[in-house]
Every structure is written in structure tokens, then in C-alpha cells.
Image (cartoon, rainbow, N blue to C red; front, side, top):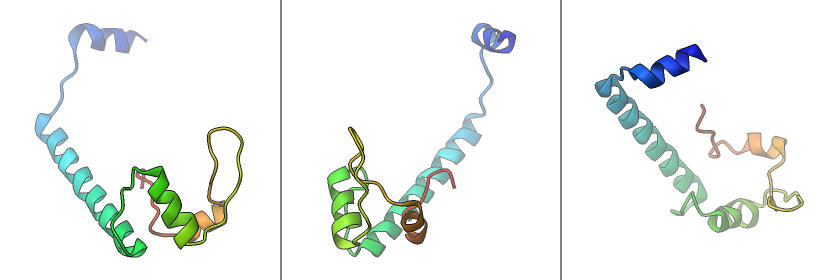
Length: 92
């Protein structure tokens, strides 16, 4: 905690150029993944729309549906999830 309090008092040095470059790199990669998802789905769709994702994954691609209580109604089984390469994690 002493390090954090010192950073709060003194601030932190940020390489603005490096940060801008990382932002551009991540934006480019995100666009590539979105384009790949659209190609594999056969049509453009909104990746942020749960309704559109539901239609693509469960109705068009016929992935198995797992009923879950409360908030999450549909999930992919781990095995099926690994088989669909166009669904990627941002952490990769």
C-alpha cells in the first residue's frame, strides 16, 4: 500500500506515445476479429447485441443451449466453445 499512496501523491509517468500505439494496435486487432466473426457468420451483426449473438450462435450455428438460473440463459459448453474458432477471447 505504501507504493499506491506514493503514486497517488506523486502521480505516475505515462509514455503517451506508447499508450497511443497500444491503443491503435488493440483497435486494429479488434477490427480484424470483428471482420472474421462477420465472415464466418455469413453476414455482419452487432457483437455487442446479445439478441443477435443468440441468433447467430444458437439458431444459425445450432450450438447446444444450457439453461442457467437467473441472469444467464444460454451458455456454450466448453467443448463446443473450443470448436468455434471465430469466438475469441480478448485476452489472447
